[in-house]
Image (cartoon, rainbow, N blue to C red):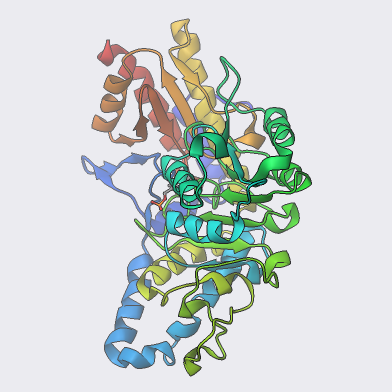
Amino acid sequence: MIYQNTLEFAESLDARDSLSHFRNEFLIPQHNGEDSIYLCGNSLGLQPKSTEKYLEAQLGAWKDLAVEGWFQGDDPWLQFHHQLKQPLANLTGAKTDEVTVMNSLTVNLHLLLVSFYQPSNKRYKILMEGGAFPSDQYAIESQVNFHGFEPEKAIIEVFPREGEHILRTEDIISAIEQNADELALVLFAGVNYYTGQVFDMEAIAKAGHEAGAYVGFDLAHAVGNVPLLLHDWGADFACWCSYKYMNSGPGGISGIFVHEKHFNSPDLKRFAGWWGYRPDKRFLMAPGFKPANGAEGWQVSTSPILLMSAHKAALDIFEKAGGLGKLRQKSILLTGYLEYLILEINQKHGEELFAIITPSDPNIRGCQLSVICKRNGKAIFNYLAENGIIGDWRQPDVIRLSPVPLYNSFKDVYKAAMHLDMSLVVSE
Ligand SMILES: *Cc1c(COP(=O)(O)O)cnc(C)c1O
């Protein structure tokens, strides 16, 4: 696509966008009586208009049926999670039984590590991306401590090369190979939260398995953003949250993937609870844990139905959009347009005022662009916020902007870039 730096051009792309009507399905925060330009779906996705109705339906079932809501009504709560599995399997490239919803992300990471990080004195190391999301770092560090190993020895972080922002796949693979004999686990994000880089999950899974390690992915920034093929890639496990690109509400219920090759692995320990028990026998309340088949066998607690209904509202929109296919095509154009406009600003001013650290190859990035402000970053960010452009700020000098194909328009992107340009004058 050859882009143009005009409002008319942005509007013409919106007019041709077959997904543009999905914007009307979301509640967009207002700024001075107009829609703000919300480019923060990487942090908290917008609320679907339908969420309230989905929640009301379950509040109604609670009101009318009370405890019988588990068994009666339009969506008996005991089976409610089944409605979420197919749409999640579609977004993650999983088989239906390989996914389920439960708890929240970091909790699930811990629960999955109980199964997939079982270090021995020989194999105890975890290899991960340097600069992973802090919660993942803390989770890994505490798991290593829990098993009596030293984080400094057990955790191997792979960083970009000197002067680079993006991790090279070849460097990840060679780090795996170098540590092959001692690796228990390779844990990577699907998309790095800071740079927006999409990792080559297929290559990482292959190399990790050749080294004899388990391979897991944290897909917080990947699900609902970029295409995933967890089953075919052979990932052992994955987890994600639902409140970023999946628009399911702050602290919403999270999801897990466990590959079907592990469904009958008796050596996989787990921390169990009654909601992971075989559903046909759960209410016999018998002693001795017998896991449900599939990812459901990792469930622990009673389904949080209100969170699940908010999740359902959001996933139904993805289903209506036909999954990620067309959304991803639009996303590539939308983020590409933002990139083009930012580079135009640099060109106009004759210097690189904004350095984009996100990969320029659309195949290895999603919605997000992470932009280093060479000067006055915080003032620029504040100027954007005062003008209704909502991105987010990461110390020391990065603004993350994420145009989301479900609810952002090309006009949003145009206006955001226009304000970014204007901010330069004001922030001097
Ligand atoms: C957003 C995010 C989290 C947040 O975890 P919660 O348990 O939901 O607070 C964790 N890890 C990654 C990689 C994230 O992007």
